[in-house]
Length: 538
Image: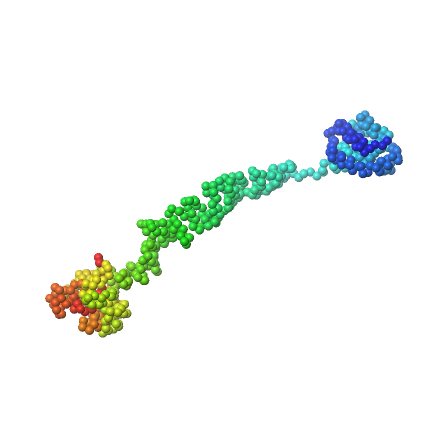
């Protein structure tokens, strides 16, 4: 009898359902898609199978290899149950046309034979199917489990599921958003993998990793770079836009390149130096050479300090110098005559401050002019023009100019007889210049160490007396140059009855000469030109 492929498919499916009812504990069902696929593939060979089966009858004694149909059928056999329902189903199918889709069991002990006109029950005492059955044409490997087992996770003895993984071969963990991770990583709250910060995980919604440290997000949500910082919920650049740059308080502080400064008390100058306010000035407080005293900026010069706001002061060679015209001088040793900007040395002897060189101030008056020798030699003519003579020995003045012409600089005066006596008394307590008395050896400590021939001095007091000579009364010539030095006193000695030149024509001078070491008191004519040494006002 001929059965269509559809009939064969239905009979096979019915047998599977029957067998599953007998014992479903050992049966594994093929899916509907598997059956349909196998059924579809069997249609291609069905026509040849039908031809072969129709030309021959089922013979119990015929060999299973004599026809292709019997071969196909024998290769897909099933051991039926001895139950009557199974016999009935097989009997109804005994004369059906076999196809490549047949019922197959894993047992080889019994099969459905196409040569039999009725189904033979199985000799097996078991009433159930011995192994899983399948639709004809489906390979046994498609329904049997794989022989290889999934790998265990280390010593746990467990197998990770599809949503798990074996962490460091020691622990089973859940995957992070479907991804695995290692010991240097962690799974964030957003199911993403992140690198540990240092060696620690962190809450990625509120923190981030900055330079290996867990850092709160700025304003709870903003991350920033190492060259930035967070202030009041806002990201600001560090000073110099550098990771090592300072942070600051915006509105109160600001950056000056890599340094920060306070806006109320400091500033960044044009040289990118932070300066601090001091009175009306500014200074670099980080520089030890500057300081603020009494709201005045002081700068260190050697071991002293000076006011840098005073443009007349400077530091040269670790010495504080004061401006005098276009020159500078050390105010601890010299002073400036602001009338002509000549600079003079001074010396302190006892309680007095004396000029340490002769006055060289040009003055023209009713009485005469301050004179210079044309040459540095005896008998040189005197004139008003400044010469090298005056640069070294100073000018020569008559007494009236020296006394009444205000020749000494401001703060200084022409010494009186008392001033000279005080000087002599400091050098030699036994000396008192009265009349024409001499003070023995008093000239030695006041004279320069050269220029006096065999009677040079020691100049231990820095007075540096020089033998400048004097201007002769009658011929306006230089006399006694290199021999004598003499200096006017403010006293004219009118109490003395006679000076040899008539009353009122003489005044006191202090005299030294190279013929001895003494200091003498003398009264020449007022019209002669003599040197001037000024003494500082007390």
